Image 1: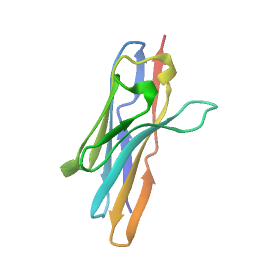
Image 2 (image 1 turned 120 degrees about the vertical axis):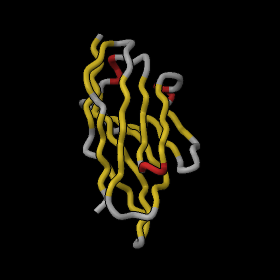
Image 3 (image 1 turned 90 degrees about the vertical axis):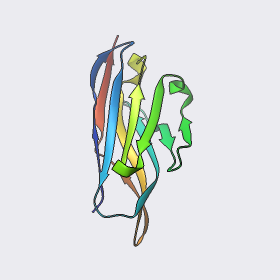
Image 4 (image 1 turned 45 degrees about the vertical axis):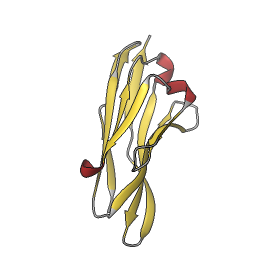
Length: 119
């Protein structure tokens, strides 16, 4: 059973910073693309940032220049550093990963972590 566990959410004032972490645990061979998504109340879940195993990154336009995604393949961990946070960044942030096992590649979600930015 593969699990993704996020940590690092919380409450911060506008202009502040937060860092999120997500670690994959369980039995698997490797992890392909890892990413962060977010869902605000009443809105659809959207991609925030993604990173391939080789380190190629992709960002939503709304976070470019403010957020940085990175990963440590040895630790099966993906990070999201969020700077200059805005109230509109308030959402539940979810980790996502394509995980390669003996039986194939499976997409997995974490349980989510709340990020609240006050104005």
